[in-house]
Image (cartoon, rainbow, N blue to C red; front, side, top):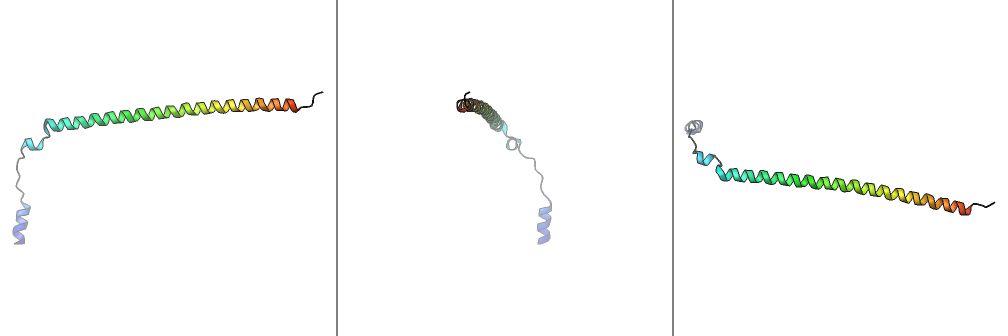
Length: 90
């Protein structure tokens, strides 16, 4: 009995598949094309958002540096005035 089952399992019957079942057809092509376009648009939008975030970080860093420079300049001017006022006059 095992020999008969082994003989049946060892001899597959080749058959030619129907091409309408194997190929995706126009609906499959449309689905793949839609997915490809959607992925392209999503990646494009993601890159645009990342780029915009980087530019915002650069602008914020420049603004912070300018603000710190103004604060340092104002502090040094204030210190000079304080020193001049406290200095003994001759």
